[in-house]
Length: 195
Image (cartoon, rainbow, N blue to C red; front, side, top):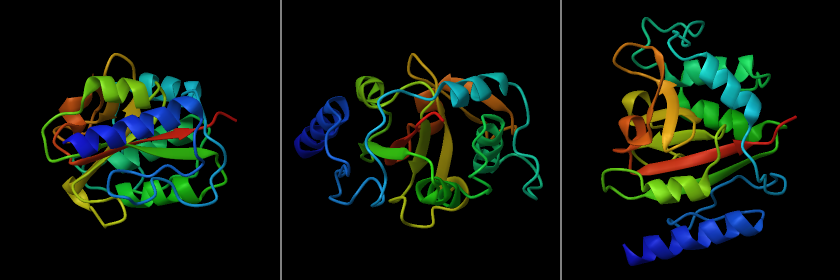
Protein backbone atom coordinates (compact mmCIF):
# COMPACT_ATOMS: atom_id res chain seq x y z
CA UNK A 1 0.00 0.00 0.00
CA UNK A 2 2.84 2.38 0.85
CA UNK A 3 4.52 1.77 -2.53
CA UNK A 4 1.22 2.38 -4.31
CA UNK A 5 0.68 5.65 -2.40
CA UNK A 6 4.21 6.78 -3.28
CA UNK A 7 3.60 5.95 -6.94
CA UNK A 8 0.31 7.86 -6.93
CA UNK A 9 2.17 10.84 -5.42
CA UNK A 10 4.83 10.55 -8.16
CA UNK A 11 2.20 10.43 -10.89
CA UNK A 12 0.27 13.32 -9.29
CA UNK A 13 3.46 15.39 -9.01
CA UNK A 14 4.35 14.71 -12.64
CA UNK A 15 0.75 15.51 -13.62
CA UNK A 16 0.70 18.86 -11.82
CA UNK A 17 4.14 19.95 -12.94
CA UNK A 18 3.73 18.91 -16.54
CA UNK A 19 6.41 16.33 -15.71
CA UNK A 20 7.86 13.73 -17.98
CA UNK A 21 6.35 13.11 -21.35
CA UNK A 22 6.09 9.42 -20.47
CA UNK A 23 4.57 8.66 -17.07
CA UNK A 24 4.94 5.25 -15.47
CA UNK A 25 2.29 3.40 -13.53
CA UNK A 26 2.64 1.32 -10.36
CA UNK A 27 3.47 -1.80 -12.36
CA UNK A 28 6.57 -0.09 -13.79
CA UNK A 29 5.08 -0.08 -17.29
CA UNK A 30 4.51 3.03 -19.39
CA UNK A 31 1.07 4.60 -18.97
CA UNK A 32 1.19 6.04 -22.48
CA UNK A 33 2.58 4.78 -25.71
CA UNK A 34 5.78 6.38 -27.02
CA UNK A 35 5.39 9.29 -29.37
CA UNK A 36 2.58 11.11 -27.63
CA UNK A 37 2.97 14.85 -27.33
CA UNK A 38 3.50 17.03 -24.27
CA UNK A 39 1.15 16.78 -21.33
CA UNK A 40 -2.31 18.29 -21.66
CA UNK A 41 -3.40 20.23 -18.58
CA UNK A 42 -7.15 20.78 -18.93
CA UNK A 43 -10.08 18.48 -19.61
CA UNK A 44 -12.01 18.50 -22.85
CA UNK A 45 -15.15 20.63 -22.84
CA UNK A 46 -16.42 19.19 -26.15
CA UNK A 47 -16.30 15.64 -24.83
CA UNK A 48 -17.88 16.74 -21.54
CA UNK A 49 -20.73 18.49 -23.37
CA UNK A 50 -21.36 15.47 -25.62
CA UNK A 51 -21.34 13.11 -22.61
CA UNK A 52 -23.76 15.34 -20.72
CA UNK A 53 -26.19 15.68 -23.63
CA UNK A 54 -26.24 11.88 -24.11
CA UNK A 55 -27.64 11.18 -20.61
CA UNK A 56 -30.78 9.07 -20.78
CA UNK A 57 -30.08 7.82 -24.32
CA UNK A 58 -29.04 4.48 -25.80
CA UNK A 59 -25.67 5.45 -27.24
CA UNK A 60 -24.42 1.95 -28.15
CA UNK A 61 -26.21 1.55 -31.51
CA UNK A 62 -24.30 0.99 -34.74
CA UNK A 63 -21.80 -1.67 -33.69
CA UNK A 64 -23.77 -4.89 -34.20
CA UNK A 65 -24.56 -5.44 -30.54
CA UNK A 66 -27.80 -7.27 -29.66
CA UNK A 67 -28.33 -5.01 -26.64
CA UNK A 68 -26.53 -2.38 -24.57
CA UNK A 69 -25.37 -4.61 -21.71
CA UNK A 70 -21.84 -4.72 -23.13
CA UNK A 71 -22.16 -1.45 -25.01
CA UNK A 72 -19.82 0.87 -23.12
CA UNK A 73 -17.13 1.10 -25.81
CA UNK A 74 -19.71 1.50 -28.58
CA UNK A 75 -21.45 4.21 -26.51
CA UNK A 76 -18.16 6.01 -25.84
CA UNK A 77 -17.26 5.78 -29.54
CA UNK A 78 -20.56 7.49 -30.39
CA UNK A 79 -20.11 10.14 -27.69
CA UNK A 80 -16.61 10.89 -29.02
CA UNK A 81 -17.92 11.09 -32.58
CA UNK A 82 -20.62 13.56 -31.53
CA UNK A 83 -17.89 15.63 -29.82
CA UNK A 84 -15.94 15.78 -33.10
CA UNK A 85 -13.48 12.94 -32.44
CA UNK A 86 -14.45 10.06 -34.76
CA UNK A 87 -11.22 8.10 -34.19
CA UNK A 88 -12.69 5.50 -31.81
CA UNK A 89 -14.89 3.00 -33.65
CA UNK A 90 -15.33 -0.23 -31.72
CA UNK A 91 -17.47 -2.15 -29.27
CA UNK A 92 -14.33 -3.39 -27.44
CA UNK A 93 -12.81 -1.21 -24.71
CA UNK A 94 -9.18 -2.19 -25.38
CA UNK A 95 -9.65 -1.51 -29.09
CA UNK A 96 -11.06 1.97 -28.36
CA UNK A 97 -8.09 2.62 -26.07
CA UNK A 98 -5.64 1.53 -28.77
CA UNK A 99 -7.36 3.60 -31.43
CA UNK A 100 -7.14 6.70 -29.26
CA UNK A 101 -3.49 6.17 -28.34
CA UNK A 102 -2.50 5.51 -31.97
CA UNK A 103 -4.53 8.39 -33.38
CA UNK A 104 -3.12 11.77 -34.34
CA UNK A 105 -4.87 13.30 -31.32
CA UNK A 106 -2.80 14.68 -28.45
CA UNK A 107 -3.69 12.21 -25.68
CA UNK A 108 -2.21 11.22 -22.33
CA UNK A 109 -3.11 8.22 -20.21
CA UNK A 110 -2.61 8.30 -16.44
CA UNK A 111 -2.96 5.49 -13.92
CA UNK A 112 -5.46 6.28 -11.16
CA UNK A 113 -5.63 2.89 -9.43
CA UNK A 114 -3.66 -0.37 -9.35
CA UNK A 115 -5.26 -2.25 -6.48
CA UNK A 116 -7.80 -5.01 -5.87
CA UNK A 117 -9.29 -2.88 -3.09
CA UNK A 118 -12.85 -1.77 -3.72
CA UNK A 119 -13.40 1.83 -4.72
CA UNK A 120 -11.47 4.67 -6.26
CA UNK A 121 -9.91 7.17 -3.89
CA UNK A 122 -11.91 10.37 -4.60
CA UNK A 123 -8.94 12.63 -3.84
CA UNK A 124 -6.73 10.74 -6.28
CA UNK A 125 -9.42 10.88 -8.95
CA UNK A 126 -9.84 14.61 -8.39
CA UNK A 127 -6.08 15.24 -8.52
CA UNK A 128 -5.45 13.17 -11.64
CA UNK A 129 -8.52 13.90 -13.75
CA UNK A 130 -10.51 16.77 -15.17
CA UNK A 131 -14.12 16.84 -16.39
CA UNK A 132 -14.10 15.68 -19.99
CA UNK A 133 -11.32 13.12 -19.49
CA UNK A 134 -12.05 9.55 -20.53
CA UNK A 135 -12.02 6.87 -17.83
CA UNK A 136 -11.22 3.19 -18.31
CA UNK A 137 -11.42 0.29 -15.86
CA UNK A 138 -9.82 -3.14 -16.41
CA UNK A 139 -9.69 -6.44 -14.55
CA UNK A 140 -6.09 -6.97 -15.76
CA UNK A 141 -3.58 -4.55 -17.28
CA UNK A 142 -4.96 -2.72 -20.34
CA UNK A 143 -2.44 -4.38 -22.63
CA UNK A 144 -4.41 -7.65 -22.08
CA UNK A 145 -7.66 -8.42 -23.96
CA UNK A 146 -10.09 -7.58 -21.09
CA UNK A 147 -13.11 -8.39 -23.26
CA UNK A 148 -16.76 -8.23 -22.23
CA UNK A 149 -17.40 -7.33 -18.59
CA UNK A 150 -13.65 -7.32 -17.84
CA UNK A 151 -13.41 -3.68 -18.91
CA UNK A 152 -15.54 -0.56 -18.85
CA UNK A 153 -15.19 3.01 -20.13
CA UNK A 154 -16.84 6.40 -19.86
CA UNK A 155 -16.21 10.10 -19.35
CA UNK A 156 -15.21 11.90 -16.15
CA UNK A 157 -17.73 14.47 -14.93
CA UNK A 158 -17.20 16.52 -11.76
CA UNK A 159 -17.69 15.91 -8.02
CA UNK A 160 -16.39 12.34 -8.29
CA UNK A 161 -18.96 11.37 -10.91
CA UNK A 162 -18.68 9.87 -14.37
CA UNK A 163 -20.81 9.35 -17.46
CA UNK A 164 -21.03 5.77 -18.72
CA UNK A 165 -23.21 3.18 -20.37
CA UNK A 166 -25.16 1.31 -17.67
CA UNK A 167 -24.72 -2.44 -18.26
CA UNK A 168 -28.09 -3.12 -16.62
CA UNK A 169 -30.20 -1.34 -19.23
CA UNK A 170 -27.87 0.08 -21.90
CA UNK A 171 -28.67 3.71 -21.01
CA UNK A 172 -25.96 6.39 -20.82
CA UNK A 173 -26.01 7.74 -17.26
CA UNK A 174 -24.20 9.98 -14.79
CA UNK A 175 -23.27 8.35 -11.48
CA UNK A 176 -20.55 8.18 -8.82
CA UNK A 177 -17.30 6.82 -10.23
CA UNK A 178 -17.42 3.79 -7.93
CA UNK A 179 -20.78 2.74 -9.39
CA UNK A 180 -19.12 1.80 -12.67
CA UNK A 181 -15.38 1.64 -11.91
CA UNK A 182 -14.88 0.95 -8.19
CA UNK A 183 -14.38 -2.81 -8.45
CA UNK A 184 -11.89 -2.72 -11.33
CA UNK A 185 -8.30 -3.20 -10.08
CA UNK A 186 -6.83 -1.05 -12.86
CA UNK A 187 -8.34 2.36 -13.58
CA UNK A 188 -6.90 4.97 -15.92
CA UNK A 189 -7.93 8.36 -17.21
CA UNK A 190 -7.09 9.56 -20.68
CA UNK A 191 -7.05 13.22 -21.60
CA UNK A 192 -7.69 14.34 -25.17
CA UNK A 193 -6.45 17.83 -26.03
CA UNK A 194 -9.13 20.03 -27.53
CA UNK A 195 -8.77 20.82 -31.23
